[in-house]
Length: 550
Image (cartoon, rainbow, N blue to C red; front, side, top):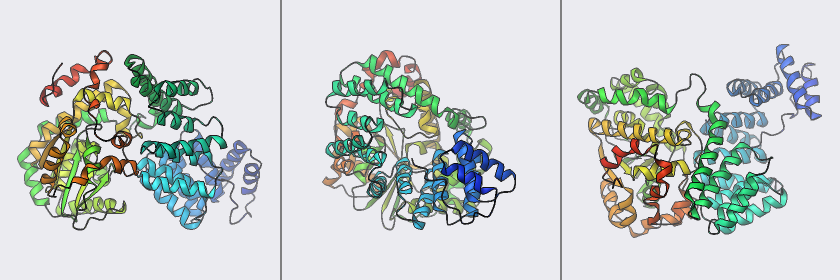
């Protein structure tokens, strides 16, 4: 992402404390500029450029919360400063708050719509949110305004590759390489579109991995793609080693964000959440849910849950093409309720006794977030697809007791392997998937929670088996349509076309663009040795869901 010019001309330069910092910044000596900004603020300086410069120093040293505070202050001091708003958006993105980041970038562009860095950064935040079609538009605008921005062309190439548009991906990537020879992101895209020639992709990726100038994130991505190239050559042991090495690099780079002191992890959450569920008095919870019942804006409300890589994207991609259905893909619309009720067991228990006014507030916040994503709800069946909301089943039941639940299931061994192999946008949940043992523990905890909670909550639910969906798509999709209350339509089978048009946001987009294929089932057998440490953890779920233990 691009922060922009931190040396933008201030409204006033009378303050003698300000001038030395600005002069150093204009001379390109940013270390001195940041030092002088710190000294100026300590001396009483109150100009947005000073706080912007000090925020850069905080960010460079990993102090993102302090940087956010400084940028917020800079924005208050200079509400018309588009460069500060852009920097504020970047900081929010680094803090894992892309929805807020989008708002800051849009505010910056409202002040100056030809500001290419904000368009580029808006594309990055939208990509984090999974809004790939809007991200493409933002990157395209950035490239139009700044045609020499190799990263804008490279990001357009990557998104084209994700939706299966090989020609566009290759064209954009080569344009990026013409502007910046050797650009790692463009090489990664060319390797991705060359998956039908895995030997060539392997050679390209090994050349990239061996370079000393690529960063940790690009190194991790390259190793993950190398794993795919080796897997395509039926070299699973080498492939797994590449996946594991890349994941370890990504995990080390992201650890300060997701395992800092005082920050809850999925592991620590499951440690109290599962016992809470097991001890829950179902009668009390159901009685509370009845009090909370009220119709929502759509004709019907559906939550599509399960675990990542279990088929949620496949069925959502199909249903979203129905004229009576609208969907939202992997957005955190339950944010406010999750913040206030999922910090610990006591907070979640308070939800059972929350009054009508409290429930109405959180329900309204949910719908506001949904509609802010551009979803038109009136008269439609609304599908909220986010497999990580499995751990938020109590929130769903309390706020939306009339909602219907589709719970996607796939062979647990294939699920955990696939999660370990794929490259996700990182958040506290996907961070767990970078380690095989932690991914299996996450799966085990999530499934335990769902199995315990589902009968206690009384929600209308239907289990969707991935392997059956692939084997008999029309039959299974018809049954799902009946469950959510819409008529089956033959054109729902064109989910691959929807992915190729860029309408699928998740990490499964490239696979969805291929259409139905049965070779995804049973992949775990080729990695049996590598999966050995986690097979005992997954074995109970293999039996529970009726899969062949061998």
